[in-house]
Length: 602
Image (tube, rainbow, N blue to C red; front, top):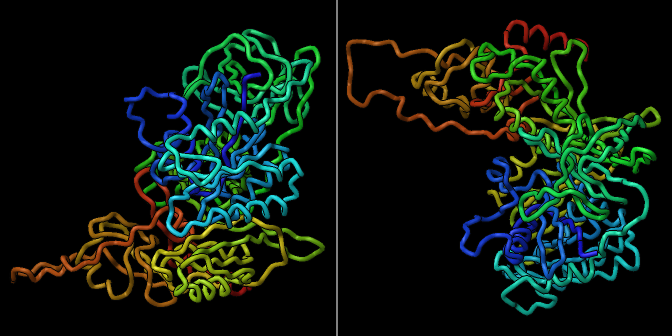
């Protein structure tokens, strides 16, 4: 059968999406004079802004009359749920490794999943044009990694290709050429054609698409049999229930899009239109003899956040979806396609506990919602604690930091203060490579501090390891905040007088309300300030005596930085145009009363 299904896996920024670009260009998916830009597969706005892949996507190319289905996957641990399910569609994987950095924590995570599914690996060592890269050492490190992950003899005998995605060449040796044909030949030679099992239809839904014209579209790989247009099939759900449905339309992937067909045979990936109420992991099977495939298992979430309705004085001014019903419907819809996400409703129905893989995973969800016009408040991220044999256990992660030598001591100091333990310290060129075992709690808020301490030079990566006994309290933010005393517009006159008290998050002329966080205090402890006082006018005026011009610009925090910054009694108000930090209890007297009550209980 002239068909190959291959997924591309790697750590963040090792060049997966660039490689897909080169495959699309090499197989003439586009006209020669067509301007396609770079990172073609990162089609989502958020992906383009952040320069990362968040959702896995498919493309299909034809090379030497053989069709290759290519699946691009995300590299961040937070989107592991995406990778775990799409690997089910592949028969082989291309493992991309940076020729300087070598295998990173995320490489280990995705490779483990691929090997467990018995996929045939091809190793590509990318970026060999980088200064002080070390392709041979990296090749040995990859082999060791395969060995540690209990790869079979066949998987250990992997082919290796070298090249530079950016410069558009890949070869089976370090000799530079002007195309990527050796790699495409390798895919056809080493990746097995899909195994064909004879029997009735079986197809697992591993991904879903949505079209405003066609509704929900189920995507998956046909494991056996074939599926036809207008055929009556059975949908076997995770709980064992079976529904009879009819296939309206069938599509296979071609280039960047889809092509309508009448029939699809086993081994190919296809998109099925006309199925309602399905979930990822359900099986489309024969009507007479419905047999389900094993359900996709996804690793547990490690972090949760409280999502609630926006109850600030500026409620409803900015967004169009503001009620708890809107919030509930949106989160339910998200759970259908985001496998690693879980949602629990609180008793009042006003707020929801949302469980995810990490701050980035939850941050992308909040950012997507605010762009769709939702208003909500989100609380401080909390890690999930388990009780095993009456003892408290918390999630631990492996943290890898690459940093110039002069900053290594600062990094070690920062991580050990957050209860991290150093496992490995080695020199790679001019960089120090450090590995730590650290509680997940210690990672919240670490990135900002780390980048400040190393003047932005540190490269951090982490992945969930296991649950270990609770390590005790981890110090939070040292400084307090300045809180607004009343509602109104901030004035340059007031901010100027308060500048020596802290670093401001607002500019003059912004609307604020009582209880909103305006600035970071230079000392521990919170302070209530009036930033809306206007300058009293007198009949004396001297040119240039107005001090408002000397105000330092405000500190801009991204959504993830706000999530790492807030403490347990604070939350973030997220609306389509504003991100504001505030106290959970806005009224000062009520806040003090609550604090005394908590202290008495403690």
